[in-house]
Image (cartoon, rainbow, N blue to C red):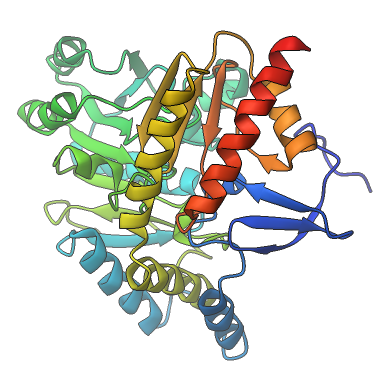
Length: 380
């Protein structure tokens, strides 16, 4: 049997990891400034994480959501305390797409409406509703286009106002920081205006924090840089440090109904153990502060190089804009300097998404590699 061809692959296979590094079978070391699509939050093979998962799988890895699971309650308690959103309700799922799918469903249940406002450059997942709210026609099949979505430019408040005045919108869904779109940060005053505007017209505000959440921006959620309070928040990626887990945070005003949502694997014992371990490490090692500290250092140092037309982001979610494609640069970084980085929908944007416990030594190694790789790529 062959694997279904999905991605073009680099001829490199990491077989183990430690902190901000991954290693191949022959011992070659690679600095990970991509975190496997922003998934690695507390570093590879963190001892506490390994211990909690190993201990839990030796007890009970899974049972259905038809029985009580104290680990779910522990995870919810820690998440509420660290995020400052302890009055929200938590629905556990297995991925970011599933989180957004259920968030959109909740908004539709709550409002009785079906139209959604999303934004150009948005990526919310590949499942039916989530992909319909994603700004990429190439990944939408005919079956996905089953409800109306209006795409607007970020930071154009008047455009949102005009659409909401039609009084048929179930939800406005926006990323705390656009990831796949190229690390675009919504203006703080723009985000602050959205909740009241939505509520005036009977719509809900969904903040997609799948990539930008869990400390990556230097705040627990990226929207907290603006102080906004959404109705629904979605998360995944860094939530499990590699173990599949996602979640939907739901404001207390949205009341659940029996059978409204459901999941087989969401909130399993093993997933919750992974999620609790991640929160333990984020708290004990003060990783929000580290993400802010190292991110500020990196962004200033990157601007000082003068190599990029724009450096944008928050914390350790950084986008580097170039005047031409970053394809050659990524290859030189990977093969010549052993550094993993990410691309974006914009072919001229390089994404940096390191683990939150990355140190100054790793940041300086990245900066050295970038300066040499940019020069090499521009003269190739």
